Length: 284
Image (cartoon, rainbow, N blue to C red):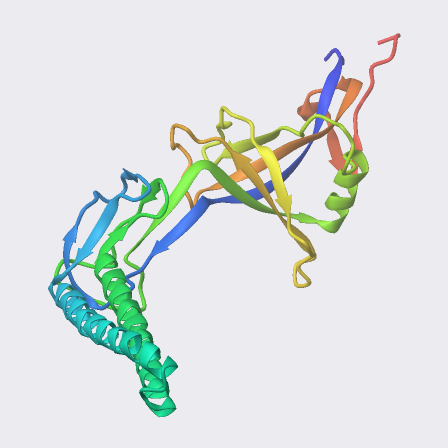
C-alpha cells in the first residue's frame, strides 16, 4: 500500500447530553380545579400563550369582596379627612381642644392605613384571579401535561403541570478532564484574539449534525468526585431536530498535523501495547 501524505486534524471527543437553553417548569400558583388545557402537547408555544385554566369563580368572588372592603375604607377615609379639615381651623382659633385635633389626625391616619391595606388586599385578589390563567413564560416546545381536566391543583402539588423548553439554540453538556482542560487552555489562552473553536456534534446514528456549535461556558470548579469540569456548548436548532434528553458525541479539532503520513488501519499491528508497521524497502 502506498503511504499517503496530507494534513490531518487531531480531534478530542466527549459524550454530551442535550438540554433546553431554558427549561420553564410550569406550576400552579393558586388552588383550584383544572377546567381547560389550551395547547397541544409537543407543539411550539409562544411566550404569553395560555396553557391551562383554573376555575375562576372563587377568585372572582374574592375580587368583588375586596372591592367592597376597599369602598368601605374609602368612605371612612373621606369622612375622617373631612372631619380633620373642619377641626383644623377651629383648633387654630382655640375653638376645640388639642385632644380633639389629635383624635381627628389619628382617625385620618388610621383610615388612610386601612384604605392602603384594602388596596393591597384587592391587588392580591386580582393577582390570584390572574393566576387562574397559566401562560407560558417563554417560547418553546411544551411537554406532555401531567394533570388532567378536573384535577385539583395547588402550589404544593408534587408534580409540575408541564415543562416548556426553549431549544433554539440548544445546549449540550459534557465533562472534560483536568488534563484535557489544561491542554485546551495551552492552545487557546483566554483573551487571545483567535477565531472561535468550531464544535461538531455526532448524533447517536453516527450522522454529523449539519451545523457547528460554539463553546459557551466552563463551570467554575472541578467536580471532586469525578475530577472533571462541566462544560457547555451551544448549537443552532432552527429546525428543532435536537431535543432535550438526547445524547451525542462532541468533537473538537484541537490541532492539525501538517504533512502527516497515513497508512490504512489494517496495516497496523498491535503487540503488547506497541503498534507496528512493516515497511517495504527500495529493493522490494
